[in-house]
Amino acid sequence: MHRHHTPCTPLPARQLFEITALEAADGPWCTIGWGIDRAEAETVAQDCVTRTASPYRAARIRHDGRVLAEHRRDTL
Image (tube, rainbow, N blue to C red; front, side, top):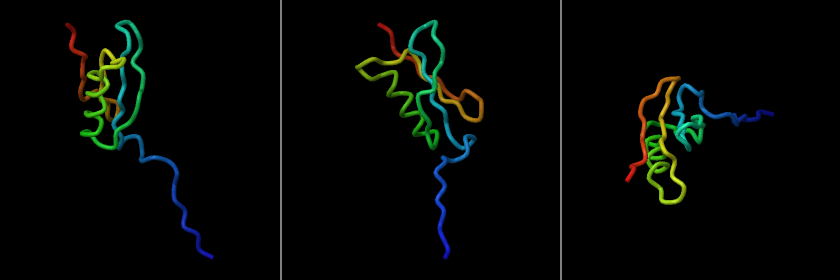
């Protein structure tokens, strides 16, 4: 009997784009999610700083340990 095994682990971390966010000016950067490609990660990061309810101060896109982009909330 041949059984097909489907892995339940995500793609290797080096293929994912980490999204981290900063809630307070003196707070730590916390991982809030992962993107499967840069475009998805950029969309999530931008949404996190522009949403009307509880926006983050800033959001970063990291890939393979490097910061690739940072989005900041507009201040009035």
